[in-house]
Length: 293
Image (cartoon, rainbow, N blue to C red; front, side):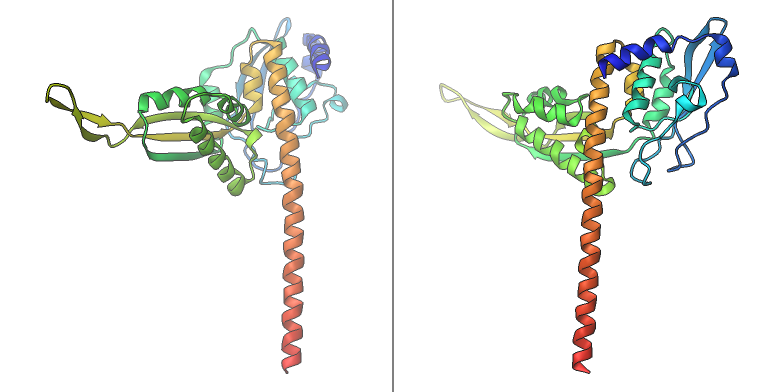
C-alpha cells in the first residue's frame, strides 16, 4: 500500500492537454440520488487545486453496492478527476484519491465544504447520568478519548490509569453497539466526535473540622455526553498533511471495509436462517391443522 501510494503520486502530475481532452466521469453510486462531489479546476500548468466537495453522503447500508466502483483506467483518467466519493470507498479508489490529494496539497479546501459534508453524516448519542465523580476529573478522561476512532479510543482507555476510564469505555461500546443495531455500522467505521462531562446535582454535606468547628462540603456528581459519528474517509485523506498520515487512514479504511463485509455476510446468513425457521414453523402449523381436521 505504501509503495503504491508513492508511485501513484508521480503519475498524477499530468499536463493540461490531457486534462482538457478527458471527459468527466459519471456518478457511479446508485444508493442515493445525492452523492459526494469532488470538483477540480485546471490551470495553465495542469491540475492546480481541489475546489469543492459536495455535501450529501451515500449510505453504505442502503444498497447492496456499498462502495463506488470507478473504472478510471478504461476511461483514461485517474481518480482525481472523478466527481463522486462515498464515506466508505474501495481501497484502490482511496489510494488514488490520497495520491491526488497529496499532489495538490498546496491547495486548501474551504472549511464550509467540510462542514457541509460533516452535517450529513450519521451520528449516535450516548450518555451516562448522575456519576459519583468530579466533572473536572471526568473531563480528563473524556478529552483523552475525544477525536479518536472507536477502536483507537478503546485501546487507549484500556491503558489509562484513571479510575473512571472503564466507565467511559463502557459508554463508547454501548453507543457503538447502538449504531450496529440501527444502521449496521461497525466500530471501525465510527469516530468519537464529542465526549465531555458536565456538572450534575452536587450534594451538600457537613464537613467536620478540628476544635469543634464544622463547615460544608459538596459530593460532586457529573453527566457524560458522547457522540459517535461515521468516518468520512475522503475528508480525512484530504485533511491529512503528510504521507504517513494518509497511509494510516488508508489502513483504517481497509479495516473498516473488512469489518463491514464480514458483518454484512453474517447479517445475510442470519436472515436466511430466520426465513428457513419461519418456513418450518409454517409447515408445522399446516401439518397440525391437517391432522386436527
